[in-house]
Length: 301
Image (cartoon, rainbow, N blue to C red):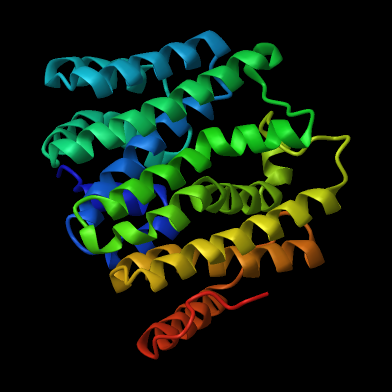
């Protein structure tokens, strides 16, 4: 049986499978499809078992497919990438095999959303290709804190910018908040990516990636993550002040609250530490109570 887009989302991201459904339509469907497109690009960037030139070629082919959205070409590329073994992860392998389904769904979105998503996903794929090309043999190793920030922008800051434009699309009532949202959008994305990087740093090294610069004290990375999460809280406050739909606020606030809890745990116990399902449940319950009471969605730190 052909999986649905929702099936693909659940098989490729536990966090986003939890948060995307709370978004109002049509933003829910737009963000779900956009996430799957970003995940396709991420799969090629992460394909450390491929030589760098093959990964870059796949990213370029994917960028072209976003522009032409040809069903026949999508089928051809999906078969090529699947045969080449794009990922050892079962969910990502299935996503690559279902690229035609995702591209077809993408093509059916509001034309303004299609243009917006294609622009940002292509920019991210371009940035990923640049980082793949930098490392010897395609193995990524970042040298400075600015390198780390540049990488986070390419893979997550751009996502924050895209989400902001989707939130604003056709929502005239939210337009006055744009001046507070747009300057913080990239930092919102960077915050979540930084926390993932410090959490997964040991696994990344074992798979040939070194996102945390060796010469940068870990305390500096944690401090940057805390500053970024504070800005992410300001972003969510701007959404609330602008009377954004509850689902948009919840979608943004939940991963930020989970990131705070994760960061605090990793600082105490080290990389690889995860928060429990019970903690996730408690955080979600607190968030729901705050939104019910029209209180700040993110707890000030």
